[in-house]
Image (cartoon, rainbow, N blue to C red; front, side, top):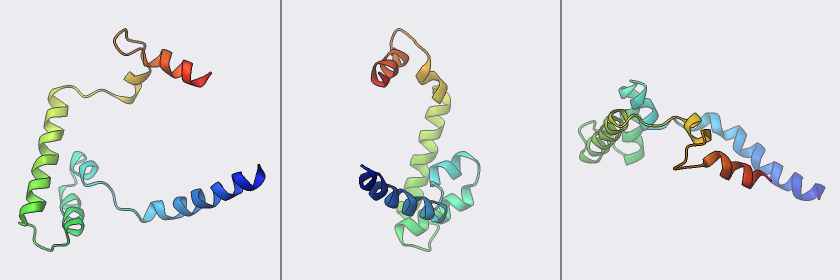
Length: 99
């Protein structure tokens, strides 16, 4: 069992080392009013240096629309998943899975 755990740990450590090198999500940057960085990452993803690129502008528009819709619908929070509402009963499901 020790070999199995150690073998899995190797990949986890490698991944952990490379996480700081990953760029932020354009959606997360746009949500936190950092549009310039979001556009730069989208341009890099689409392999272009043109800000007016059709694909980049289209994706920016989609991200903006998604954020606006979520704000209008009062998007839920992570804590809402644990509240035991009759329609979801997520807490009960969590406890069943735990045991």
